[in-house]
Length: 365
Image 1 (spheres, one colour):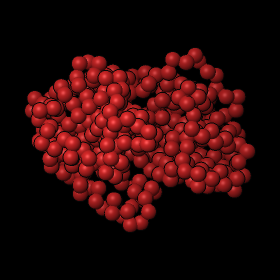
Image 2 (cartoon, helix red, strand yellow):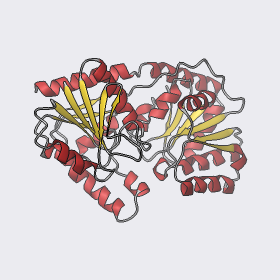
Image 3 (cartoon, helix red, strand yellow):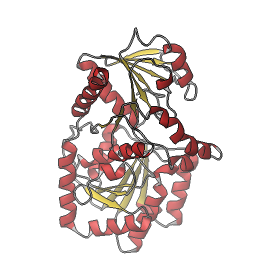
Image 4 (tube, helix red, strand yellow):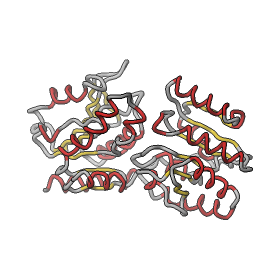
């Protein structure tokens, strides 16, 4: 197949996230199995206009808010001769390909924005985004869809989607590192962007409650964000009188991030919503279970009572589960083992195979 991927960011973009990582892992496997893949995305300072990434041809033009127009100009009326199908990857704003592509369209969406609008955008953009998102997504309601969680599938069906929705299993880049012992102190870990929608402040408050009720240990925060938001997190930890027990690691290399995941006892996630929560599965491979809020995506990446715990979305409930898990060694060992076993089942090869199956079925239809 000749496949075009439209995504506002490419894997090399400094702001690329989990969605781009997952898409690229599948894309390069599609190339390895004999398919042609072109990936169109926005440019960024210092980038090349065209670049070959392990067989995936990456083409860049425009910026974050103009890349959709550049895609239309580049490919309109020229799709038929160059591609068999287009994968329209929706990250907040879609490319509206059902209106102009002229070839089979597959929508790839990891999560809806919904509540994230209220956390990440100022008024009135947040209001407009929240109201308009279900409206413009309905343009895709008869288009076949690829997604990574049942939560997103259910969200789309509530919006009136009638086409086939394929839930593709998430893959994990399994680390080949030698076994790393757990930290000497009970260690809780957060990994991800430092942004309001991730609700890292809830994790700090939960850790403060945990300590006030007799728990001991440390909290590691791995990831980066704006200077102002990072300072607000550090200031909150000091006001909660947990500052000397909290370490902000900032952005880490993959090797260092994996080491922190292996050393930690429990991963904590309190996001408003996720597509899946890839860091949960990444931590699981090191025998590190997760305690997560009961929100879309996170409730998919954790099997409650088997690989981790799913709790009501409040710092108090998070703290209660932290205490119960640290006070029950048998439960902890069961969850750690279950997490590691499940993570081994999540491979990019399996994900790519299911994507090929779905795309082939779309072409046949």
